[in-house]
Length: 302
Ligand code: PEP
Image 1: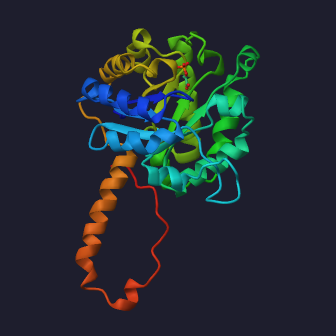
Image 2 (image 1 turned 30 degrees about the vertical axis):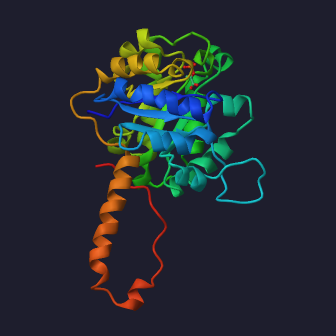
Image 3 (image 1 turned 90 degrees about the vertical axis):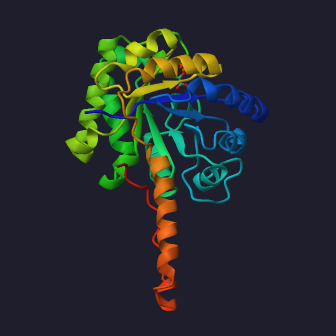
């Protein structure tokens, strides 16, 4: 089936807000008309200005992490609602640096996934094994644990908002890329886990990205693999020209129709719903207008 293609840049702790907007100015013409969805995951301080610069373009801005609470006395932390209001459309969760440098557990990542969905942020859930686990033949066991814990209790209708990223820890920032066969096998396994959780039809629609030393030279080949729906790029996303080359190489695999991201669809649906509700207002009684609105839901993709 034709799934949308995603090219996601993860800047990690690089670029000031000024550098971020300069970058986006350079990137806009380079990726105009791209068949892939272009996502940039930027530091917190760059989200608002980057989202402003990327407004009305094909570039979506997101965050690299968030807290699992709605709000509270958590000094130094950031809430999903704050990211959303600043202009983030998505958030990377469970990145290997969060797991292995900051000690995030599967249970915490699970709570963050649920919170992101409640806050209408599209989660990009990263999973992947370490070299030791791979050498011990535990890749599938680790992936299964990470996926089943993180996605426990995610309602089937919210599965439409999920993106997964397979990032073998040993391939991140090391220049080592997994072989095509290894990547395809891991992605097919991840899809089988999603199928167990949400059913085959939904699982077939969830994008699964590959991350780990992706560069212009290998992006096209990786993106062409059957169960790969795009790439998550760290180091090579820091230069707009290199990132645009990766987008071009991956976009060639994207088919003719790029489906809208759930974040964009959600915004459009909300706009349509609000204009429809404006029209309806005259017809409803004051009492029914006072009824509490339901919690914002993540919209389904078309
Ligand atoms: C990443 O940060 O998710 C990543 C894949 O990094 P790199 O492309 O530098 O390996």
